[in-house]
Length: 313
Ligand code: HEC
Ligand code: HEC
Ligand code: HEC
Ligand code: HEC
Ligand code: HEC
Ligand code: HEC
Ligand code: HEC
Ligand code: HEC
Ligand code: HEC
Ligand code: HEC
Image (cartoon, rainbow, N blue to C red; front, side, top):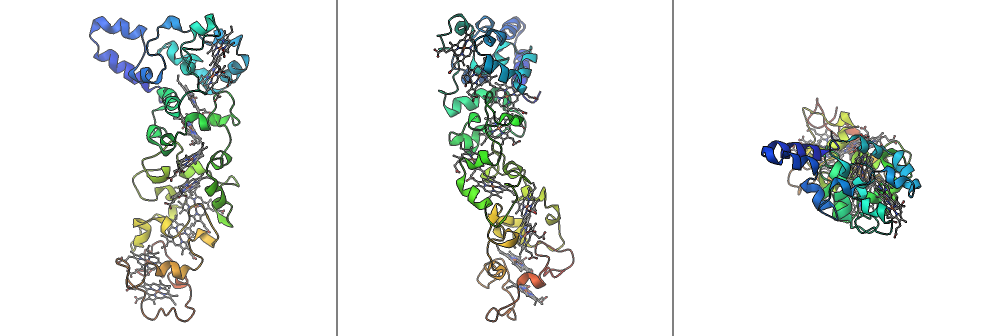
């Protein structure tokens, strides 16, 4: 169900139609969505040839399709041939079968714009939280289409039909991040312990940087670091308000614990000076002129405490 939003559209249409038009709606199972995605707006069932008709000439593509999850579209008899088999993606192909040199009515992915490709795939994949933002994602807005990452016929990784596995897939465009994950201290993405897509949704989210998750600030980190979430009796306001990134580099860092600065004291004093509006200045006995101990030596519960307002325990 989650892959066929069109089903809902159609059922609603059917329900909303006066009786006389029901038959027409059934024999033309075309939604508004599909019209805009298709290069040729009006099609009838006889314009479709069915997947078996393609087998003899496109054996290789047929095989890759048959072995991918997309064969399941043939089970969707309710919505008719425009949602089944090869033609669900390539468009009505009866005229092409009759005359193979006629490719004018086909949807040709190599020649299509990123926008048209995305629309084409989203006819079936727009539902569910994973894909809800796909149209507005930074990827889509920057002409990165579904087929930049997925290939229905030539996938290098069977799972999710990816053109490459992560993180190489992402590094092929995100070189800066590749350098970050090569730093001495890093989330072990290259080692396979976690993936870019644990924190980001490549299909877009409502959060900045396509970060996964919901309303709460930094919920993406709490998924794995639940002990930092609290709630604590004494919260360190910065954790809750500005988030983990105010002290940590999420990808990688030259410093232990992914700290932004090598000197923890300098990090703390960015805020805990008298000039900083919200944070109290460190008391005067915290004399930085002499090599003062690391702040976290005493203020150990830096992410929040249930016992002490100064995070000693
Ligand atoms: C009788 C043989 C034959 C049959 C049957 C046939 N095709 Fe083709 N198809 C061809 C040939 C030949 C070409 C290359 C045409 C050209 O480039 O002028 C082609 C090209 C294509 C292309 C474009 C490929 C590209 O490189 O851009 C697609 C997509 C395609 N066919 C899909 C289908 C589908 C879907 C079916 C079944 C509904 C089908 N074909 C049935 C012979 C066939
Ligand atoms: C889920 C959508 C989808 C389905 C279903 C699908 N194709 Fe394709 N097809 C594509 C895309 C996308 C490309 C461009 C190459 C790629 O990314 O794999 C393509 C490319 C092609 C090509 C060009 C040559 C090539 O291999 O790149 C042919 C021919 C073709 N498809 C035929 C078929 C036939 C025949 C079927 C059914 C047996 C089919 N396709 C099913 C999406 C689809
Ligand atoms: C920047 C790369 C990228 C782009 C662009 C992209 N995807 Fe994905 N997609 C992935 C990765 C990586 C996964 C597997 C990890 C995950 O679940 O997020 C995935 C998973 C999926 C899945 C299976 C998992 C699920 O929960 O549904 C579908 C379906 C899918 N993508 C469809 C699409 C469609 C449709 C588009 C175009 C609108 C698209 N993707 C664009 C990278 C991408
Ligand atoms: C006619 C509807 C339809 C269209 C159009 C369509 N898909 Fe799918 N797609 C499906 C169905 C059905 C599945 C199988 C879902 C399942 O297994 O539960 C699927 C599965 C997938 C998966 C998941 C594979 C996995 O391993 O779990 C990816 C990725 C995907 N499609 C990408 C695409 C891309 C990219 C396009 C456009 C080129 C596209 N789809 C077009 C119906 C469609
Ligand atoms: C542990 C979670 C996590 C993982 C894993 C992760 N990211 Fe990020 N990423 C973030 C956070 C958090 C931000 C926002 C940083 C900020 O606001 O300063 C971000 C930001 C980004 C940005 C925006 C530019 C920037 O650097 O601020 C890109 C691009 C990016 N990540 C790509 C990737 C890629 C590619 C991978 C996998 C190789 C990846 N990320 C893995 C958490 C993660
Ligand atoms: C085909 C190239 C390409 C691939 C592959 C790709 N990206 Fe991107 N990505 C882009 C472009 C272009 C942008 C938008 C411009 C920018 O911010 O760099 C972008 C933006 C992003 C952003 C938002 C950056 C920000 O500044 O907020 C994140 C996060 C991201 N990509 C993560 C990923 C992840 C994770 C993968 C792998 C699953 C991936 N990308 C694969 C090209 C790509
Ligand atoms: C005010 C700065 C600051 C903020 C904000 C912050 N941290 Fe930390 N974090 C630190 C410092 C300093 C250390 C090193 C503690 C030490 O040396 O004992 C640390 C250590 C860690 C460690 C490793 C040691 C441990 O306690 O498990 C993890 C994991 C961690 N932080 C996760 C997070 C997460 C997740 C967030 C956001 C919810 C976050 N941090 C927000 C300063 C911060
Ligand atoms: C998918 C799970 C996952 C997510 C999401 C995640 N982390 Fe981690 N994080 C880990 C694991 C596992 C380690 C331990 C890595 C290792 O041992 O190499 C780690 C280590 C760390 C460390 C270093 C701990 C130390 O002892 O030095 C910090 C700091 C940290 N994470 C912060 C964050 C922040 C900030 C976020 C959100 C942007 C985040 N993590 C999101 C799994 C995750
Ligand atoms: C990005 C700014 C920022 C950074 C960096 C930061 N803090 Fe804070 N800190 C705050 C704010 C804001 C408060 C809350 C003040 C309040 O509640 O009135 C606070 C509160 C505190 C308190 C409790 C003060 C009280 O109310 O008694 C201590 C102790 C403290 N921080 C220590 C540290 C240490 C140690 C570091 C370095 C590991 C650090 N902070 C890093 C902003 C910051
Ligand atoms: C030797 C232990 C020790 C070290 C190291 C230490 N502190 Fe403190 N800190 C204290 C004590 C004791 C207090 C006072 C608690 C009180 O008066 O209730 C305090 C209080 C604070 C307060 C609260 C001030 C207020 O007005 O409520 C802040 C902020 C603070 N320290 C920041 C820091 C920073 C930043 C560093 C590192 C540069 C640091 N501390 C290092 C012991 C230490």
